[in-house]
Image (cartoon, rainbow, N blue to C red; front, top):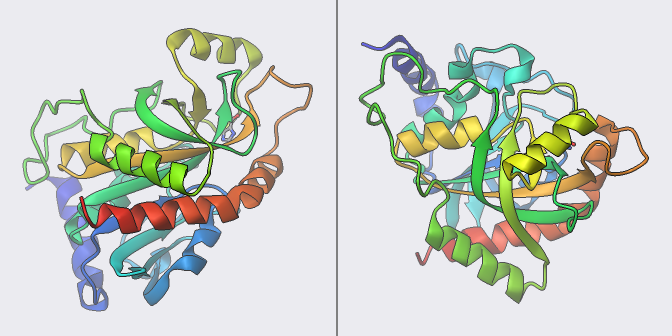
Length: 276
Ligand code: HPA
């Protein structure tokens, strides 16, 4: 059997008894967006540190736990704190939580993150629906022996972000009068922010926003057949686009300010997913 698969399975078996609900939607909360969990009718919480062999996040603002509960009537599992490649974990550990949530039964993966805006039409605090992505220097999590239990060796990636989920999010944003940008999200490894020259390069490559997560998770989720959607909170203008140096605190502050709109957008979208 595949070692990576075995590890996910051992994680699952170590918590199986504690999971009382079968989540339909798995939600990954990005930097500073963790407060969303307040909107969930919580049934159970599980600290990552309680899960055998689970990689534990070390970033401030990424308190690590799974929250099980209901958004209105929809059963969800929510990751408060994700694992980043820049923390030094092997890429298979970075995507382990997504595979674990798939094993829990989640069919839909709702990815969120904080990003730097590259598209000059974007401003800090904007939300961007992720229409497609670019992986840039982050290793592909499917490298190694294929895990047949999850999916095929050469998965199609021509429609990673589900059309119906995107349409639903667009509809909800219109109803809620929340401005929703759309674009391409590009993942670099971090942890350093980009240089202005790199941002010019990424713009040329076709990226609208840049961050340090999400793409590898989407690749793993697509491999195992989950339906995927993503929203990026553009927390700052990317390097060289404003006078200010970038700080993690600025990113968190912008995410905090966007939180009330973000909560509405996520909650109403998750509820609307039920009828898809
Ligand atoms: N670059 C990379 N990641 C980020 C940024 C950024 O400007 N802002 C928030 N996450």
